[in-house]
Every structure is written in structure tokens, then in C-alpha cells.
Length: 253
Ligand code: 13P
Image (tube, rainbow, N blue to C red; front, side, top):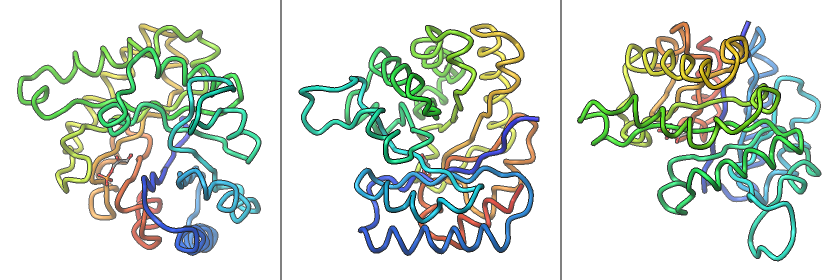
């Protein structure tokens, strides 16, 4: 059985007080309303990680993620945050290779590979993001595009290193646009990703890997998306900023 995960990527939103309010609400709703074995992850901005983590400590189902990590271990890298620092404040997951970081911060495949390595070395589980822009989908090159993203950053990991990686498929045309991939589009890409992973690593590791869908996922479409055999959960942006919506998405499993 694969781990079922719903992760909220808060991106650059919320002040400190707002962040604490949001996570307290989510924590309470998850305790009161969510049955079953869904792993819930919140990914607040860096300055709020420790405080948010403290609030969720007593809830086994809630986990803490960072939105980024430095590719370097330590040293003179002004403004960067290392995997060891994240680990020391209780971070368990880290989002790596989100399309916004690839686009606006020019993160390339080699840098993402280094980020994966440093997170894994600290025992932090990477949530590795991939997904094509609209022009690639329109040109029917989306499978090749995603395959290259997987290959260029993931394929250099060993089987053991890959064992803990979570993959998120986030088609760029669906992020923040209100235009979701259909459940069929999500399923066929997720199955394709799993197949590519089974070529890079062993089949069991690929089978065990949780593959999340991201892109305008909301309480209205989550159930249909999560019912697909290769969709193991969601990476949620906008809807994760509202406790009611986020909890309803978690309850869609
Ligand atoms: P939205 O859910 O706002 O489309 O964002 C998805 C996303 O980028 C999550 O990482």
C-alpha cells in the first residue's frame, strides 16, 4: 500500500500570526474529522517553520515541510537555508524543483540533483516536482518533457536514496489558473511517471513511490483525482490557505 499524502504548499503567503491561526485550525479539523491513514503535510515559509512545527507536534498525522533547501551543506551562501538547519527545527519533507523555483529562480536539473542529495543525506524526504508548460502539452510533447525532468535530476540517485522520494506532477498550465488536469490526464501522466521510475530504479521502489497531483486541486475535484489508481494524493497551493478547503481535500480520500 502506498502512502497517501495531502500537502499544502503555502508559497509566499501569510504573516506569522496568520500562519499560526491557519495551522491550528487545520490541526484541529484533522484531529476531529479525518479518519484513515492520510499523511498531512504543511509547507509554510521558512520563518514560520519552527513555530508551526511545534503546534503540530502532538498530532501524528501532521508533518512539516520546507518549500526549498540549499544545494550546499553550509558556509558562505548568504540567504540560503541548509538541509541540516531544516532538520534541526523538525522539518521532515522538502519541496524540490517546484516550477516557480525553476522559472523565477533559475534552478536547473544539476542544482535540483544536489538539493535532493543534501535533503536525503539529512533524512528529509524530498517532494520532487515535475510538470510541463502549456506549449509542450499543446505540441503533444508532455511525456518527453516530464521524462527529461525526472531523468535529469532523479536518475543519478541510488535505489536506497530514491526509496524515500515523493514525486509531484504539477502541469504548469494548471497551477493557480483554475484549470485542473482531468482525472484521465492526471492518471495517464502518473502511470507514465511510475513506468519511467521503474526503469531508473527497481520496480518495487517505483511501485512504492507516492505520486501527488498539483494544479488547481480543490474540494470539488479532489475526490475524482484521488480515485485514480496512480494518484496518491495532492500538492495543494491556493486551497491549502483555507483550513476548511484544505481539510475537505484531505477528506476526499
Ligand atoms: P494551486 O493549487 O494554487 O494551483 O497551486 C498548485 C501548486 O503549485 C502547489 O505546489
